[in-house]
Amino acid sequence: MKFTKLAVLAASVAVAAGLAGCGGSSSSGSASSAASSVSGKITASGSSALFPLAKDAAAKFKEKNPKVSITLNAGGSGTGLKQVSEGSVDIGNSDVFAESKLPADKAKELVDHKVCVITMAPVVNKDVAATVKSLTKSQLQDIFTAKVTNWNEVGGPNEPIVLVTRPATSGTRALFTQFALDGKEEASNKALETDDSGTLMQSIVQNKGAIGYVALSYLVNNQDVAAVAIDGVAPTLENTYSGKYPVWGYEHMYTKGEPKGAAKSFLDYIMSPEYGALMEQQGYGMTSKMKVSRNQ
Amino acid sequence: MSPQSFRIFRKEYLGRSAVTLCGLFLILLTAAIGAFLFGKGMGTFTVYHHSIFEFLFSSQWSPADDQTGGGQVGAAIFIFGSVVTCAAALFIALPFSLCTAIFMTKISPRIGENFVRPAVEIFVGIPSVVYGWVGLVVLVPFLKETFHLVQGQSVLAAAVVLSVMIYPTITSVSADAVRSVDNRYIEGAYGLGATRWQVIYQVVLPAALPGILTAVILGLARAFGEALAVAMVIGKMRAFPTSILSPTNNLTAAIASDMGGAMDGGEYNTALWTMALLLFVISLGFILLIHSLSGRRERPL
Image (cartoon, rainbow over all chains, first blue to last red):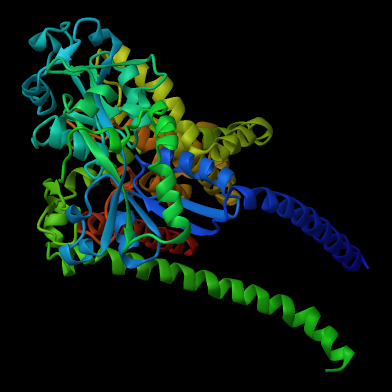
């Protein structure tokens, strides 16, 4: 008796939901048919640095194209590259060129879409920032390789330097090592490691002599830590575009072969000037504005 | 099938088969997890040709994040970090746990049942991220100020956080052990003129020892497997700690921080799986130890 009642209730709820769902989709369907006719499913995975931007772009893209469903996963650049190469996702997000993680024959099958430019900035505790506004590259290298261990050796207060870094597999760390430290490995046995850029910022705030590095997108609307210029050049989008500021890299969205259907429209949208303006507000740079280029 | 036999079937066999299936499924699941970890973790030795000796005793850690390999996979720092934080946590938690267990069973069972037990149970329910966060915000700055450290993240911070987490486990299991000590021993000791305290530490504690050891091992198993809270306060510095106040890293925190970035199937990723396999083997060892201990307890004295 109880069961029949429950079943009737469940069925009626399902029917009502179904009707409501139909009503909703048909109205939005007619609205979208005017805007676009793109439909389909997009799956993407990879870089956690690119994830916030990809999520934002996906939400805006879906507003315009309600028939498209986008599934995003952050799992690290390596995972994204491997999955797109195997064909288990449509788009593989990566901080690094595919050649650096995949065997050459696999990397050749992938098409690179440089959707944006990401700029990495050294950041310090505000206590240090009062006197240290800029560091030379060689000073940065000495600090991160623990040759210099007190701020007074580079013109700062008499305070021990606390290195705050990211894991060895982090794309942020890879870029910073390559372009700010000229490939010199950080002193991992002297550094506090943090899982993500948010935690890194927290550690910088808490430790007086702390220095670390984050993407520019984390410094938008941030008052708690201070960015440091490298060789007198401040880490800004303008300086990145002009090529004066060295620590930047592309964020890649790889597809296996040329993209088709919904994936193609999504990539077109994220690289459009229309979305580019929104991108810059979040601290990411537009690839099309770069006056310099890189291929590694 | 007649209605009669269907009713018998429903009454007797339906529940029984469901229960049996669930039991078998659980065994299968455990075996599958073990096999999976073994398959993934052995890659370090079979695919990338590192020796088990290197993995366990070398501190050179620089696995290559690709499928060509050629890096170094010495996990000694992480293993040492796990062992030393767990040992220190046990050292802090055990005295408190034993005292609480004795208090709530032998000194004042009424207060114990009404107030201490619920309080201990609340400890169990608090998620580890909360412990870690409180540790990071309260304990880490406190240690930094008190000992004039460059940073408060340290072995001690991890040990304190872990000790709070294993305290309820050890307390409740050893309280059960103390409670189940045969009353005849206790009455016999009183009859011989022993004082209450003499009974507790010369009769009750020795008799409850196997149960207390089981509690310790359960606590250790929890401490070994804890990742989140420890990761937040240990500092994750890849170096052997020079003192209890210096930061280091451990197995779980190292796995958690690099599993997202390391490429699936690469040397780095495989080395992390090997660390996961090691954790599995350690917890398996703990379980076997508990079984041999509880087996001993059942033997007549």
